[in-house]
Image 1 (cartoon, helix red, strand yellow):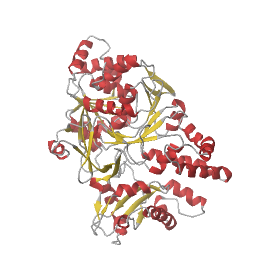
Image 2 (image 1 turned 30 degrees about the horizontal axis):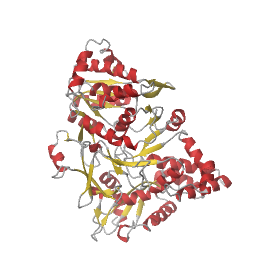
Image 3 (image 1 turned 120 degrees about the vertical axis):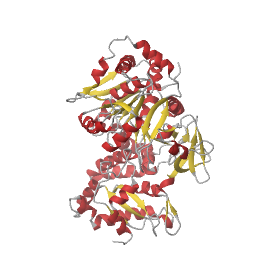
Length: 586
């Protein structure tokens, strides 16, 4: 059989791989495996239940979960195979955004994982006239559990109806509405068909290294994001078992238990892993720390594809092997997306035998546009475009895309839909980039985020920010200067690293976040880090001044999106006094 619609995947997998661990998660301290066969039986029963409940083809259901778990997949599969459109909702968004997403999508029911999410949705239910019911995965007082719904499908007297609806579903039918996290304005509901997502799966198949049906992937990035969701479909189509991590806090423990061959990451996680490795490698001091720091130099000087020097072989045996062990010991590759990955860290992880394949995409493109592979890799690029799409760089440098992975548009928003396509039908990504002579795609900046100084010079802030975040002192940074005489930056220090640095150097920087942000010694040290970066920049784009913010930038305080991108307008408004101080206007 051929996979044409998302719900064909488990049937295809059963035909080709028949696994006892199709998808798995951990319950009460034990990994519980769902076989391909059981997965199909469970989701068919749930499809029967959804039909008996009264849902019909074209209806919408919302799903939100605090962590990835098998029930998320059950509802996704069960809904899709009866033509019900799934609306994944970020668990961390505000109640106000929940109202918007559920109301705008016309969701009939909402499935939540736990008491906290139940309370959030239930508190706004009176604002949602179309929302009939909230079901929970966990047992929650006064809430309907998903098992009550599941039991409706116990008898298979309407399985014929399930099969009939399934047969009527076309690859061009709407599968999902995914709301973008929205760095500006209201979220937009991206409409993705079965064909959109399946085409991305097909386009990415040749980028999976060393495919083997014995292999496992550990998943911790949220399934409500199209990146991890497409990876779930991609891996299960290719016989790779999916294990869902319990939480970010237990990721290290889960890595050692599952010993995965693959894992998807975001750059911030790679930075955190490296920081933890660096801390462990240097904290003992003495000869061990010297050997560790020497090995880092070996890694930094590694040239991709070159044979290992004697120094590299020694460093690998005594240092890098421990890095791999800490990540489970079996990793073939990490796949990184969502933001730009530091070239230095990418090089070092490749040198340590933990290759990171960096890719690029958007929700609107299902999502992958380009990704590196073992055969064709250039560090600093996001790889070559996948085989079934056409990437065109417009005259102003904007990356545009055409092909079967590209969205139909935004739900109930024809005006926004018209604006994101060129006259000849290419989707405008909003990113600036180049395709080199070997067809590797390089992203240089966000079109909307570039700004012009009062001297008329254009500055691409993301490039500078990505360089800066390689410093252990800098957790977050936002380069500013639109209409101003020079670029400057608001910096959120890595407060934990700053405390550790101060303690080692017997410097008193205080204990509160405000004290630390006001420390002249810390600011001076971070200014030195910025100066190092400035040496690689044109004079007009050098950061001339910084201010440290006395607060951690998070999604909760509205400064980051659920995918940890900067909300630039919000950051500037939140720290407006510091912004004015950068330009001596206080």
